[in-house]
Picture 1 (cartoon, rainbow, N blue to C red):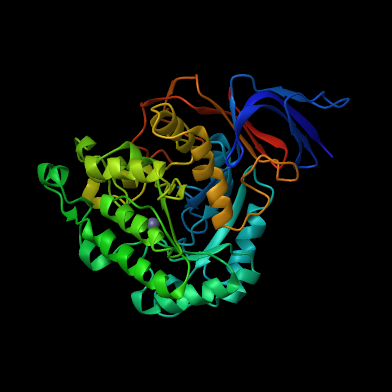
Picture 2: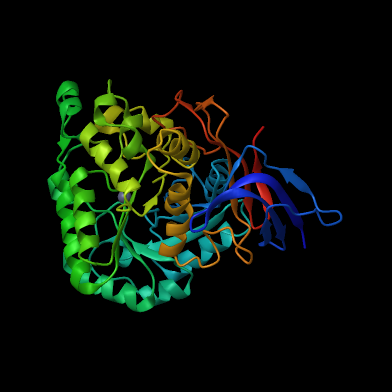
Length: 423
Ligand SMILES: [Zn+2]
């Protein structure tokens, strides 16, 4: 089997912390992690001096648009985009067309995802056809390889919530919710705030998220584990913090745009800033940063949501919700979180590697220990580069184009193979 020696990098383990380490990979697994390792005969050596070596980043919230949206993204382009962004594993959302809601469809697309440069895992629709009327056949979906259940794009129906939580827990798989009360969102397209008023656009009230978050937490308090997707509000993270203090089994994620941007930065009717939930106030952004630092938020996911540029050109009223994020997650985390000293590299490795691995039950991922999968994210903290206007992704709907960032991937290793190498 192939071997590879990664020398002189700063290895960042989410539990034991960081140290200069050589990492020997054999047969797709980490074989040894030590201060100095002599290369075995014939073993290729990668010099990682000056680089930060993380257990592979696991992005628990990705839309790959296949089937039905292949003009915006495919499994293949999503996997290449992930590899270019230092993401070694991604959990795909089931709101495709048709929805990934049956064992047969899941099996078909899992076969298509095999052998791509990043590991693609699938979540399946929590309700039949993602229609919100009755619970899917969850055990059949688990048997077909689903790693989680969600109706992402839509909130889980309140009337089915307790039943869903119990069934998912009995199967040992996580239930993820997109917390949004649609009747409060109404026709809103942007956070109800100063930018909405200035641009004359219908606002989405913060309560649309908060009300659903509170309902999810209440259900979890009695029924069992629940994971809250893309939290964007100070009140949401305060509720999550309180729930955790009570010992209730709730976890939560946020995305780089919620800790980097606020709605005040939306100057024109530019739909590359349109996503759900919407960019919130500067106070919300600060609260999300605090919740990342203090352990309230468990993981960072991109909510990579590619759309064709002809659709995004329609402005806030006409364009679909969502921005791409696979290729900017790592440098945004490094630039906004670590280099601004809001959190440590070790905490970042919890948020981007260890905690998503635990949520998804990926037992051999998320740490730099012998026996673990040889998935590595090697980031360059010194290299300063502006976000380019063209991505490996088929889409380019990003509000970060032109923004100078550090911490770009230097190399990405998946199952012991270098799947991306910076030019
Ligand atoms: Zn969502």
